[in-house]
Image (cartoon, rainbow, N blue to C red; front, top):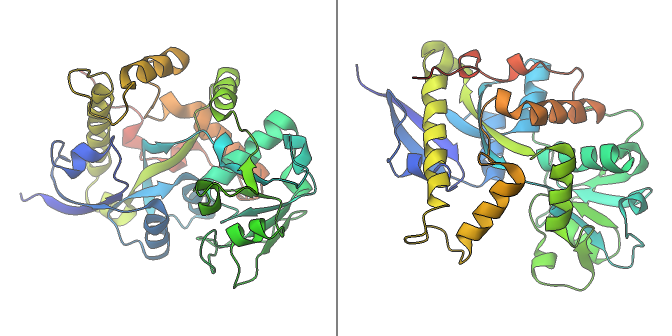
Length: 330
């Protein structure tokens, strides 16, 4: 039987590169790997279901599962995990020094539903007591006008969420004093350019994130892998084949972090950085798997429900292909 041709749309990560370059194969499949940025992948996957296997926003996946409209079956290969303290930017002069100071402020975000800001709001509420209803949210394009929510968003009772004018951007509004802060996954161009009006709420980001992990044991999950439902119905073996390939590719990337013969990553103190991270977070700090990541899965589901993004909490069994919960071992 010939291999099943599949497209995989995913970022060009070290932990997936072995699939892209062919060192790791997906059993029974002939892979075309499309290395794209997450924003483009999500837009095309959720609106048009263009890809057989796709990197997915975890919050958007939860929303489609909750509403019964999911076109993809989840696989617990969490290709994107990021602590999000670094994604809270403030306008210098807006009187914001601590999380408490965000109450009553105008905060811009690209979309209310993106996973990064779900985590940021969850952290603010559960760690600092600042609820989403205490903030004036403004959504729209960060660098270009005209961005909208990728999946339909119903009005959320008690929440002030409004789109910015169609001809404006979040970066421009923060610069002009029309916003007080930004919650975003992508660093604003104004911050990268070193403009004086913008800074981070947590300037000592690494220390804040390590303290958060030590307290909560949460390494926030951003993205998972999804397989088109119609393909899984046709090839029930596909989820495990895809999951095994992503796990193998990640294992190769992790090995590269400790190879000091010739550094595989452009970072002079790679070995020391890796050892320090393992000391703080464990040897398998970038965990795949449902059981291994249950704390983060349950936390994100709780946050999305509390923030009005889900009409009901989704069970973990609804989010992932059942065959990926317990992989056979030799």
